[in-house]
Length: 93
Image (tube, rainbow, N blue to C red; front, top):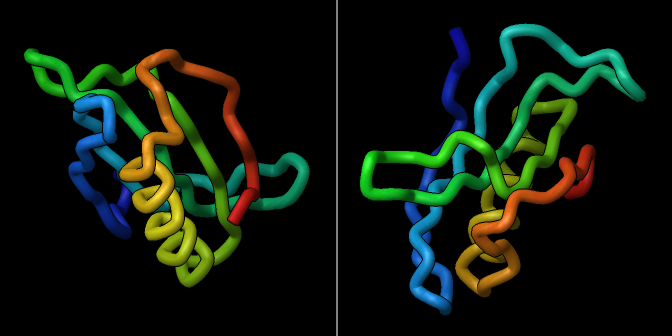
């Protein structure tokens, strides 16, 4: 089971409701380095959450994950993420 590090509901400037979730992964990824934490941005929909994901970043440590979560929340609030899913970004903090 994943351990949640942080989560936040965000309303983007265009009115899009987003959910930002940061979790400890149940296993460390092995490429290119062992990331143990992940932040993802999801769109909120009438039925709950659209699990296709709009954005993803991974981190090695819990401290990096907490800082990365805050950064992604700020970027989501500023309108950086749209409701069109795009490729995952690994390790950006």
